[in-house]
Length: 278
Ligand SMILES: Cc1cc2nc3c(=O)[nH]c(=O)nc-3n(C[C@H](O)[C@H](O)[C@H](O)COP(=O)(O)O)c2cc1C
Image (cartoon, rainbow, N blue to C red):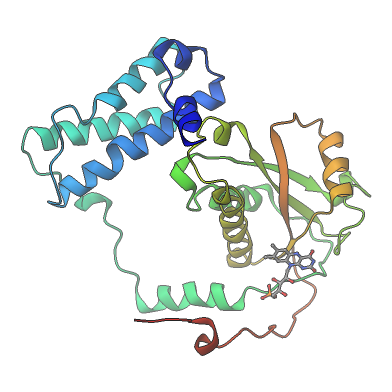
């Protein structure tokens, strides 16, 4: 089994050139992450040295990218070029100056605002008729894409579905009239291309995106509720949007302007939740 996974993992250049484009890009991101990003930052921190050919895998993938004639302005290509530049600096024995990327420490007021968003976000199930501006929707969805994601594989895809244009499509939902349904999908091809990524990471990737979405909606003055699909809804939505077999409908968050202020459902105490603190 492990051998079979390794065989699927190590492809020849010809196989990489023939690979489906989404799968190739996902493997490109994973290879850059595992063969250069982690090592370059460790070396920059004085923890170990880069081997002379540490960036050879990244360079090979950049070459394959060019041979495939993929656009050179896509984010992962630019990122890989940046890391190769970092690694060359380190290999020349130069110091990597990363100060310009250092986020400034949050002010007390910013910290308070951050925790306010965390603790005051509520699942709101009743909304006004006010339309949600597209700019807000886009910012919220972008927040989902910036969630942590296993090996930076980038499986998240979306459907933005307005209830008023698709009445009945979300029949069976606990909140059938949610004004804007933000559906989190996953492109399974990115995982297919990375068979060593543990399967359990897949749902977690979707959950991390959905949590960012719920928090960003709250921070934007909207409210939302994270909701559960049943199989009938998944089938109905996949059919309605004619989704291919590799696009999986996973979860959704309804957002809109709130018409309800629920009392916070209480949580376990930390004493109950922390099973060890050694
Ligand atoms: C994965 C997931 C699925 C959920 N599904 C539903 C659902 O189907 N219906 C619903 O009314 N709320 C759903 N919720 C919202 C929870 O009921 C809610 O988060 C929980 O009761 C705590 O309340 P709060 O979000 O206001 O803090 C879901 C939340 C999560 C994280």
